Length: 261
Image 1 (cartoon, helix red, strand yellow):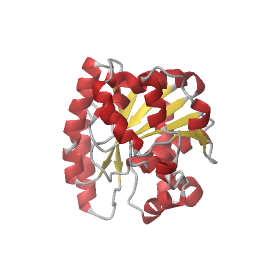
Image 2 (cartoon, rainbow, N blue to C red):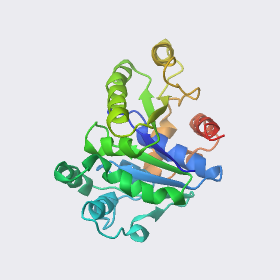
Image 3 (tube, rainbow, N blue to C red):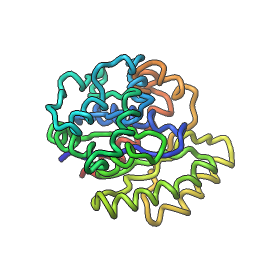
Image 4 (cartoon, rainbow, N blue to C red):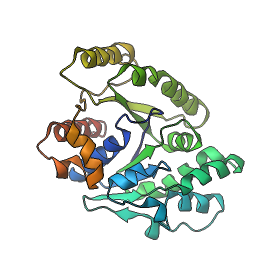
């Protein structure tokens, strides 16, 4: 059975796209069939997988969503890209911004992405959606079609404070649009183990949330190698396979797979 996981945080720069890429490719390395969906008009996920000019692509997530809105045939073959590390990708580009505006007048506008994802579930074990850093219509669409939400949070005070707003939004979507939605877990990223500050933030997250929400035991360490990997168009497993970040994402992959058993 396919699991759809939205990777979401309205705060930018918290390692959301890097986590989506490396969890997705980690799952593929475990023999799972994985689709990554870039739901951000900036196309960060698309660029991170080596497609340097997403705005020049003729087919993207915007194309498919427009097909759904206009009740047209979906052109999956031309839109889904196959990455060398075993994952499929539906790319995004700036056209997605225009789609978000046009959705305001669409019927059942929060459920456009769900009708697309529901057609893809039978072909994949996991579908990961990289959400844009906002709580706008595209993010609501992603939450409305997901089974769960994985929340990457930088180990710093302000990103942790912003968690409350996202958790409230998830609660509203669960109540009004998607009763089965749950939080997959909070993932601490960019953890600098050399500082007491990072340790204090980690403890604060555990103390505040772990009673009601899973906090992953895997934490993603601060690393220059992890920052460099997006430029290379491949995963941390290819770029720095023996590094601490690759080990951390492998451990996260195992935690996510445990939920399947």
